[in-house]
Image 1 (cartoon, rainbow, N blue to C red):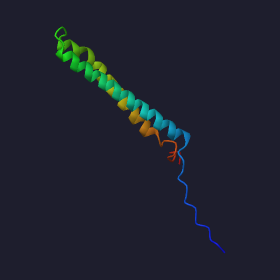
Image 2 (spheres, rainbow, N blue to C red):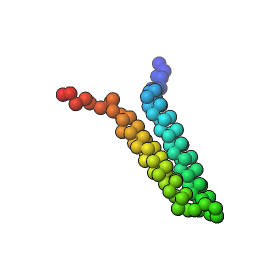
Image 3 (cartoon, rainbow, N blue to C red):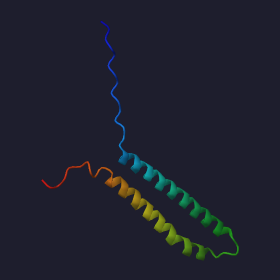
Image 4 (tube, one colour):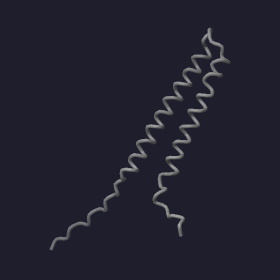
Length: 93
């Protein structure tokens, strides 16, 4: 009698929620990188432009830069913290 080899255990496939979380995280990270690069480029161009006062450039872009960075980091950390929230034990006991 010929023995069949034991099949390898299949890796569990990620469910839809995990896929969606990964997709949203990647999109937010990509958006953050593009936005930061655009702001840094505008900072650099503003520094060497003769007709633009450097103080005015920093006054206009700094709040937007801080808001964007803080919002995106908060969003990403919120996604990661809440990712396994439904799998944990409830506190009703």
